[in-house]
Amino acid sequence: DIAQPIAQRTHAAFLLRTRGDEEAVGVLMDALANKLDTPLMRHELAYILGQIQNPIVCPMLSAILRDETDDVLVRHESAEALGAIGQAESLDVLKEFAMHEAPEISETCQIAVDLIEWRQANTNVDTKGKGGYLSVDPAPSFNDNSEKNVELLRQKLMDTSLSLFHRYRAMFSLRNLNSDEAAVALLDGFNDSSALFRHEVAYVLGQMQRASTTDGLIKVLRNKEEHRMVRHEAAEALGAIGGEVAEGVLQDFVHDGEQVVEESCHVALDTIEYWAAGDFDQL
Image (cartoon, rainbow, N blue to C red; front, side, top):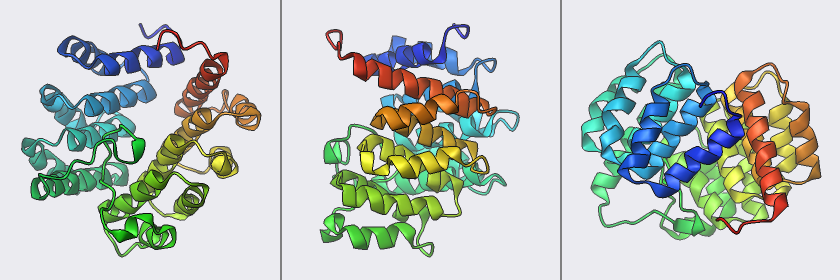
């Protein structure tokens, strides 16, 4: 029901993710197909379908990626979801759009191609749940001795001579350390030229929930010149971290003028309220 508050609808979407059965997938697909819905909600639905990893959704995700009339955020997330699901059959469409003029799409597709090909070459490596995170990530963390060296990982994170996939691996290795030192190192990623890269940094910081990054995320949210996908992800990260400072800033941007940012602030404020209530009997 697109008339309902987006925060409540997001709760419903993630409950369906928790179920993850075919009936839940069907409901999520029906919702994603509705172009009258907002780009934020539809991109969230595409993300969730990628996390569930049911290959039945791949034709739909491919169709959205091919649809030049659809929102870039939804197409980007559909491409990332194809990478998360990891079907070899998705490689053709991903390689085709890895040359797309929109960097949010082309970069996502190239990373998804690299992920699928990496998995094909590393069939015995289980990356899910590494570092205590249960998300299906767009790139695996490293498995060598560099994995716990924050400075070395920071150097790889910021080395633009490396592929985005390789730099993402450094990013998720830093996330898995889940220390203030690693989180502060990730803040350097906001200086990168790629909006996709910057948005992924904000997403990862939201997963880490380190208060030491609050000021850096607020700076991103306040920057009206920043790409909407980065600002939206910074807002949701602030909701995950919580605290009075984050809550106050999020209140300031619920009337931002950019729909994706406004809705993300509403979702983030709802997240803060939810955890502050402390009644988790139904979890």
